[in-house]
Image 1 (cartoon, rainbow, N blue to C red):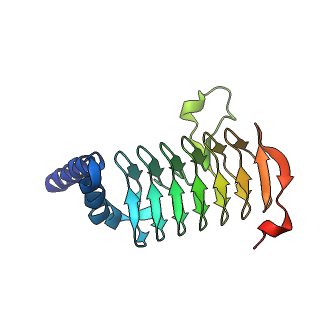
Image 2 (image 1 turned 60 degrees about the vertical axis):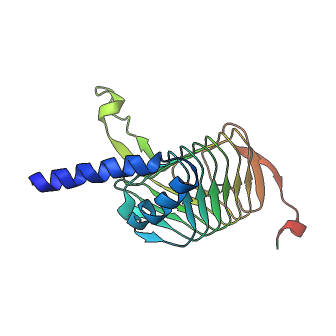
Length: 199
């Protein structure tokens, strides 16, 4: 027990060192070390400085996936699956903790400061503060070829269909059909993409 605590503490120190090591050397260090803890990993995964990860054993990531600085990936008691050729800009939060599920397809682009959160606080008991009522997990599916603009929030039990666009600053609270442009709070259909985009 004592040696396990020491081992865990050493690993935490190493992760913190790796997370914040600057420059290309830091990128290489994270690629050679931290990436290997994922449940399943593809090739060419890039974690820029300050990326925080919890729940490695519940995270699967494909090929050519890029996380910009200060993003976070949290899968404690949840599951995250990310496809190929996916990029996340600065300060993106992908959070499936508390029994949530997040599945992101191939060729997806996510803008900075976006939150993808697959669980909500419970709030049914008015005699107990919300912070003590736990969470309810749900599922988020983001299809192939989706573009999510900056400063968006995607809530649980929603699906964004293939090749759709979520305008910057939007809140996704219901499903988005494939080949759609949506925007607003809550997000609503702005237009359908024309057939010449469907290739």
